Length: 288
Image (cartoon, rainbow, N blue to C red; front, top):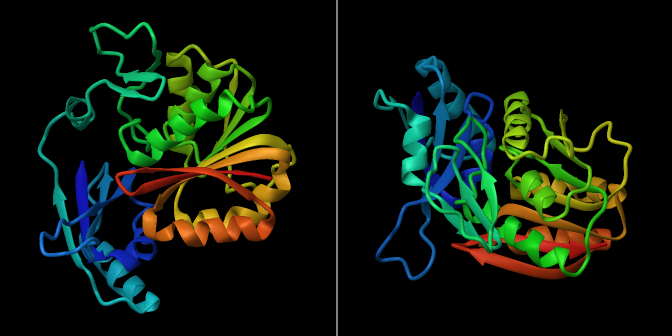
């Protein structure tokens, strides 16, 4: 397992992330705390993990040239091997069982008690995003629980399913057939495996796809936990594929991106229902 760290400014996170996402099994953004800043820190890390050692010179050059093409100063890049350990198990040691809204998320190795008033989700660490710990995932899970009591869905879609945690959560709350799409074949494999682990494989159809290209079905709920820029780009397609009165749950954006995402969906004809802010990660619920 190899790690890449790209130190950059907040406004450059999305552009620079696109330069490494095809080589990484996971990517995330980490704010570099500045005790002298009144609110926002301008400095952030993009952290990515790769299963194999990359061609370091080639990757460094790709980032430098890509930054130049975006009009961004060359960032500080560190590529290094992680310690020889079982990184998947180590990740679960750092993220122990947790309660997220009505859910109790734990690994298959967990031997402790499960709260009787919570719905258990079994999720082993894997090469796909989504553990329940991250603010985007937790926000979506809470939004699903709140939405169910008001508008139970019958035709849901998880767009960018990652580990499958949101599809599993939606299905455990309300077991109806669900489509899960991701442009990463590994994420689709992990989603299918986790659906089996949770006994909901008969409800979840996981497929490889690029956005909503080629999708002809209509939905009454679309969950999209990705990034702000693709969320904005997908607004027209999501509107087209959503039933009148249907809901969309959007996440993967930080607080400074919220206004732009809301505007893109308001312009399509969506009405804001509510939002959640978990450690500056925003989840939006909107209705068509």
